[in-house]
Image (tube, rainbow, N blue to C red; front, top):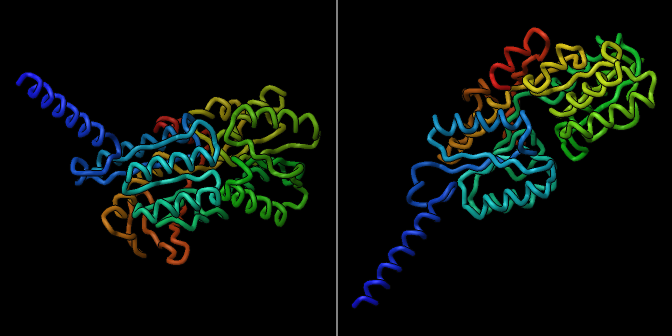
Length: 338
């Protein structure tokens, strides 16, 4: 009798453990039946831009009744993003969000996700094919041209400039760079790019070192177009070190809290951005719609995007919700946690 009783207790304890583990974060099942699950895989974790996005994801998850979390790889490596998405597929989430480092590298795993019945939402990935929807808070042309005009005015429309992107495989960063370079070529022919673009703008140390090397090698270099949140910070630090403040100008998107000091010292000229925290909230709002079987329609209003006009062919929603970063706005933006 004692052995039988002990065996039953062991079985009951084991069953309880199975229930606990199967009902962990992002698990699909009875305990999460009324709360859609979502994982958002970003380019890299631990930097201010994506820290702000994670805050937005958490806020919207609480208000929208979603079980949503952000996954930030330790480096901007497409293979790490693939692995993270594979993990989410195994967990059978309802929705996967992604901010891609390399659109093409993610296509097979995103196809696998969709074949498993998982909805896919992209941001900064308008070229991705295996998605249900992509949303952008800035058009590529408008974003690139706005930064180009800002740099041209600072440089007096002449001189050499360098172009940073997060990586040579990030299509959106390169689309911004294409638009900026084309704009300068047409409107400011006396401005010339130095070499090719440099894929260092997701790493402060790499962008700083590259800027130091370029400034030393090119006496007529007077500007940096840095697309990628760490690029302006690194280039700004290099300009400060070299004593080139007021002689070499850096423009690009960056986290106001991270770049505030450099901006006020003149090592950064400024730039344009959208609110990454708002992008995090939009991820969750769209994710909830898709999980509930709803697809945004032309003329719908989505908080954080405004009135939307989804392209039925590309499945992209493109809006212009730009914020200017300058000495007058930086404190207010930084105080928002950006």
